[in-house]
Amino acid sequence: MQKTIEVSFSKLKTYIEKENFIGYDPYDTLNSWIPFRHLGKWPAVIATQLQKRNPVNIRPMIGIHKEINPKAYGLFLQAYSILYDKTKDKASLDRATYFYNYLKENYSKGYSGHAWGYNFPWATPVKFVGSFVPSSVVTGFVCRGLWQYYQITKNEEAAEIIKSVSEFILKDLQVYSDETGKCISYTPVMQDVCYNSSLLAAEVLAMTYSFTRKQSLKKLCIELVDFVIKRQKSDGYWNYSENIITKKEREQIDFHQGYILESISAIKELIDLNGDKWDQAIILGLDFYYNKQFFINGRSLWRLPKEYPVDIHNQAQGIITFSKFQKFNKDYFLFANKIAEWTIENMQAKEGYFFYRNLKYFKNKISYMRWSQAWMFLALSFLHNESEFIDY
Image 1 (spheres, rainbow, N blue to C red):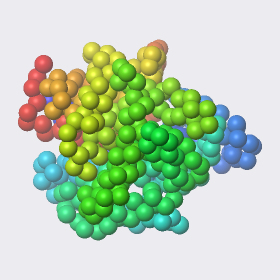
Image 2 (image 1 turned 135 degrees about the horizontal axis):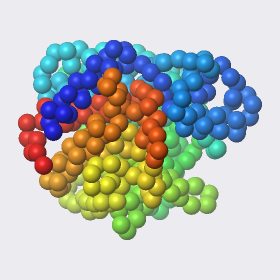
Image 3 (image 1 turned 90 degrees about the vertical axis):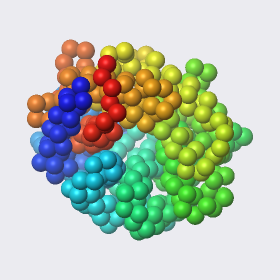
Image 4 (image 1 turned 45 degrees about the vertical axis):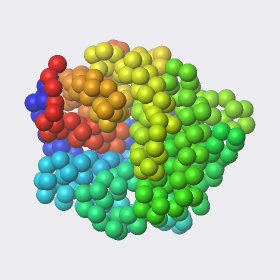
């Protein structure tokens, strides 16, 4: 099995490097020359949703080009930093330094600190976000890459950039508060409550705390995590978001479960929170993720209770989460390998890239650099060269 992972990883690495790390994205529809946005709110939303479901890639015909995605670069920065930490291979360090330098120079200007957004406009029924308008999600994942790069280089400039990002979070993103804690908004565009995005912002604040030991940051991190933990359901899962006015939650259970678990654990470690205050939430959430969101063969469900489509992002996140949390359960690391095995067998092309989705009767084989390749490259980097691998 380990040989299978190594071969798959090598093929994917060759593919993404050949493509120069640029590509299409499921949500890049509004980069088209067709003025969907100017036709009103709903044409932009509908066009985006139809395009991401279309198994035929018509992007070249409507003026959408392969581009650099800042979030993908953040994921690649993290992955190559992990690879260097494992192997001390200079080529991996050189790649990581390339992504670091790019992100250092190419951030969204005009904000209180460094921040990054998608390379395309995106629209939902409640908001429109322009190209490169920063978000806590894109910025949070870039910072995970910066943090990993700092760990292998001790580059103080990387630490200063992370501190700068905290200024963006604290000054440019609105904060919602109630008796359960606080929640940081997704973008500067509007105030909202999205659990995973707020925790990614909190993670950056926790990184900054680890450098500065500023107690106000630690206090805020605790309030942000407490807010989300209060919304965990009794069997361990989280929904996606909450409407500020109606308090009704958006019921969406997918890879964001893994996001939330990772962030809570990382924040706990970064702010040196002792005891098991949050551990029970993590254990409960992991149990739900393991038992309810995947089949025993390693195939994920889409959004509970829906089984299809099998989305590559769900697969990748499962590998990452269960690799990271093997200390909680020895079976988790074995399961991360099982997810990888199923994904390689069912969703990897002979050219090395991974498909976007497997539907019940056909596959969407379009290659997306951020959504599919960057996430799988990061996921497989956790399994690459693992000497402690145990066969099953």
